[in-house]
Length: 604
Image (cartoon, rainbow, N blue to C red; front, side, top):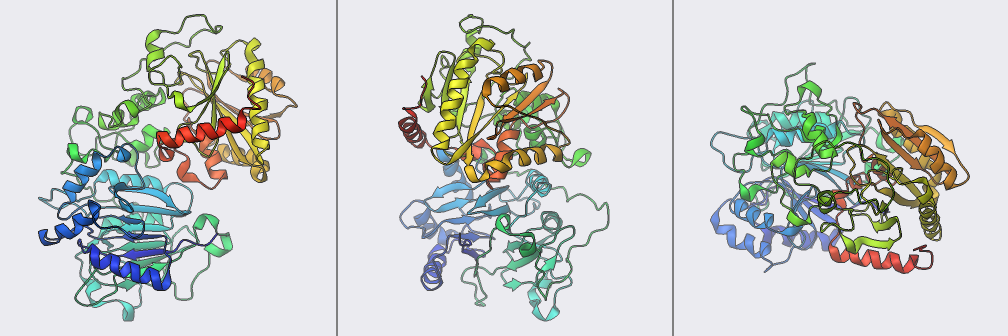
């Protein structure tokens, strides 16, 4: 697969006609290019350019190729944000940008997403200054990126509006523009961030000059970083405002390829004393309002905030159960909120105090009381309460169930395509009764599960794939779902190794046992399951069962199975199902396609 071909541009200032004319010219002579990424101020700097800018936003002019921009400031920025926030396509998690119009995406706040294999991280906005009401990044945005720096994998592109302070240190003086010595348009917080993130490319605008620094080495990393400062579109000095690169995604490179050291490489310009002070405290974005509701990562409603800056909830801790910054984190590691999230309460509700998705949200919108484990019971016992049935998105009697995803219904189980699937044909096997795990059903009902298992396995094998099954059993899971994820047959042999490696990195050791048939596997699993502990198990293609018992006070990601397979398949951005949402039309089409291929094998 060819490396993505990327165009980079500096501050646009609303000059979209001039920008896209140049883009089309470059695309014609040296393209085609896959995308354009813009840094610096994208919105107009004066009302005179507003009409030209809005022609694109409102669809009267077309954007020639996928364009992503940062820079939360300029004329019309609040207005465009308000309109975009009302677009249903922009609700919930949007790390890959707000859709402004066709081919135009606004990267707000901070985040990380994947584009054609490239890992892209961004910090949008400038550091706050007194009296500024819009377009500043917050400490929330900074801490989100610091958490990302702790994750595995190499970042390919880091996009910022301002330059990092000190980037010319140790650079060849002959190549440094005179204007680069001016501290305006530079930010020391970005210097610290880039030293931690260690991207392969760092692109910035704002200073209105072009500067391509020599590559520099990184501490505790084998690859180098290349800094590019870009001038503004139409600048009077005719400095370069558009630049083309074609980087091979780091995730596809060998160790020897990524560790190549250019002959002109220098030491890092960012040297900090040990235990340097934290990134400077930057204020919450003062322009937050109802129109700013798309910003979800760390925002908390006023009713959940305490006095003083930095008292919001830590997204990293609530979502994963841990935070790499520990006691140095600026935000609360609130175990009660973490437990509410594990019980299925909407993350937006916990962090922001509200959810914008309304009826489309599949999560609970009331805080949950810790319930006792229900006793084992047979289907049809009638012991499930009406309230639990109504709020559960897996109960067939619930008004929240997404029935268009269902592919097969039996006596005790039904199958549905996953919401936000990791891959095509990602299936859930779900008990019809509201039960917390598949072991709660009497053993006499296992034969139906076995028939479903064998049918799904044959369905995938006919398509040169193998099924990996896993279930997370926890007191916090209200309705069980056994996940069935197909992986290419060529990758099947690696599945046990990557599960074991992932568990080892987290300080756990999986128990492994191989069986010839699923009935024996299920019988053995029942002997391993302890109602007083959380329990993870996976069935890998060769018939091996991997299990792990997790004490209630131990931290373990509920999405462990999905995260591991996302790593195996080189699609880490799809580890979170919220990043993989499809329209209802796309989901319905996928269901019909699956049912057509499955009808001869469906035991129901």
